[in-house]
Amino acid sequence: MKPDHHALLAWPHQVPAPVMQTLADAHYIRGMELGPPHWWQQWQKERLAELLRWLATKDWWQAWAGSRQGSFSPIEALSGLPIMLREDFRALIAAHAPEVPVEHGNLSTYSTSGSTGVPVTFWRTEMALRINTNHYWADHQRQGRDLTKQLSVLTAGQAAHDGTHRNQTGEPWLHPGQQLVRLTTQFTLEEHALWLCNDPVAYLATPPGTLTGIIAMIEELGIEAPKLLQIMTHGQTVSPELRQRTREVLGASIRDRYSCEETGPIAFQCPESDDYYHCCVGNVVVEVVGGDNQPLPEGTQGTVLVTGLHQWASPAIRYELGDIACFHAHCPGCGVTVPTLSQLLGRKHILLRMKDRSWRYVQPLARDWLKCATFREYRLVQTNPFSFRAEFVMDHPISTSEVDALANMLSKCIGPEFSFELIQLDAIPWPPGRKRQEFVGLMP
Image (cartoon, rainbow, N blue to C red; front, side, top):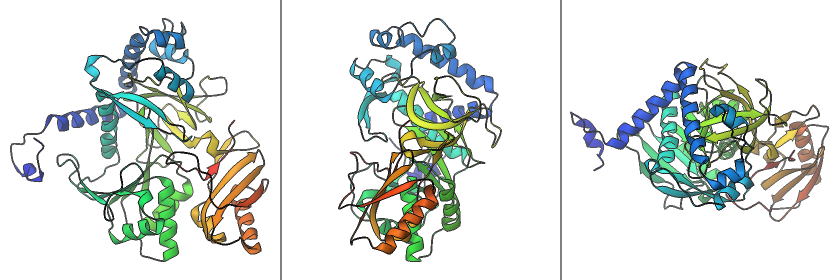
């Protein structure tokens, strides 16, 4: 039976087995990150060897990988395998019924639309879910959070609720602080801003886009902003400008998380630097490759590939997410000796390709748009290497002065070498799914 808060006052404690498992997993995860590099390197080799040996017995995998996995060491075998795209992942899942060793536990189905709005359904085992979840507990330790304090969660991934939010009691042995969970789509940005200011908490978890809008509304309304300790972001690129504004307005640092539904956690932001992300060596193998699919020198922009070490039910092997980043053998920010990512720019189709062939993340902020006019919705779509279409919705026909202000803002934020076609719409044709990309660049 699950203990209540009063159970924490008793001694000797009778701690539930799942709590002990979480604490043990988090301790092991942190130990691999903080220990000598041969610890996690040997551990990854063993886990990868187990996964590839098991896959080698499956006809559907042989049809995909063929003889390319060879008889090399696990890491060498991995680099010889083909790169798996989203359509390959979907096809492999459709090609076979899920089958895993009994020790991996029961199977459950999960779905994601990714950034494309195209859904994919896959399988996950109890073991994979446990390890995914407990990487987040390890990050609480990494970031030094006081889990007795209140946490607000603004998310699109829950059902509608009554009132301003849903009170969620945390696990008293691990997270005794109160959690206030709120559906983002049920309220306006103004309502989110007022709610956060009227009921301040220590920590906030929300996507960067929602955070950007809340800060803009706090400034526009001229209300007193709360002072938070940390803000946990996920799902979108965090710009340096958003980090600076978050510190200025909310007094909090952003601690970003990089993950995907198909494999779980990929990397967590370094606790001592905004620029680097520690790869989750206990969950995934991360590669950064160039156009020839070969590893790039450290600090060079390339395509991120991720291999889920525990995702046996729906294997994601050398899975290309479409993200751009730089790879480092260890963290230049704090010195830990695990692989580290920097310049984590996000999906290629939301990035701007520059004349020197490098990628750049650009995202005019809500306040930039709202200084030009009272837009209700907006989106910037790159139509060719040097042209954009700026789509927007507003309650009145756009005026000449508003057109001039918008054109000047876009030239300043994106670059004077680009041209912009301004189009007023009754509604923006957003793609299916919960995610809305307000900047859409060209695919390579």
